[in-house]
Image (cartoon, rainbow, N blue to C red; front, side, top):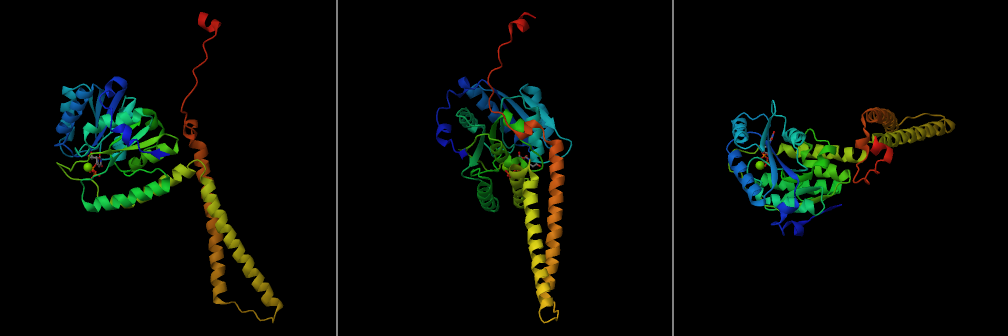
Length: 348
Ligand code: UDP
Ligand code: MG
């Protein structure tokens, strides 16, 4: 179940540092954001100093064609807690985030965009919400500073994702999110699935929450995404629905559809056979009506489709059987402490 720890997140930020001894990794995907990076670093550093956090800042340059990488190198030279990872070409935001997660060392990982639209001053609110018991906390740009043609489709998209997945967030696509690192070890992230990490995490039993955050207009550069993202987003939603529902039992879906098609085709053929028998025992004249001929072809197509769906289901099961690791099949929340070593072992 998803819930919104809004109240907890808006109060009691002062003591955050004392209670969060963990290392916080801030992961920033960067694609042509050279003007924004020095200011973003300054704001992050300010929050770190004010709150006394242990923080590393990881910039992932996703194949920028401007001077973003040179800026990152410069920041890393002057501050050992800043690290940079440069991808060979533009792989997309999800890949950049994955690279960031693979290099992050913190027990907590916070992602934010590199264009200054997300405000580092919100970080204490995220940590507060994580401390209140959530494994994933997603930001909600309650007041968005983006053009209407992004905001409105985005609202429809968020409503659809929440309805279809049961993870009720106002802003699935928000770039500012905070995770316990174990979440990121378990959740697959490829293609453009970065929008669905909370959904994928919730499907594995992690607790997902949401806090409202301040959003700022883009100051430099331009957005890398257009309206096309909603079409891709919808297709990704179908994929995520399939992965979370049937990822480890694909035949249950494909086989059910296949059997249904088989059954319909079979029933149609039985019906046509009965008609044929009745017409033979009657007057003796055999008239095949056009609709019967059409039904016959539909039935054949349904039988073929059913057979194909079931075969694809078996192929999918075969792939699952060969690739599923036990860590994929379940997610461990806690373990009892290991029993004390026996005396013999202790002496040895
Ligand atoms: N980004 C990226 N790779 C891409 C596209 C975007 O790393 O292929 C980064 C971009 O530099 C920014 C973040 O992802 O830090 C969000 O991108 P953008 O601001 O263009 O998205 P919007 O805010 O318009 O949704
Ligand atoms: Mg942006």
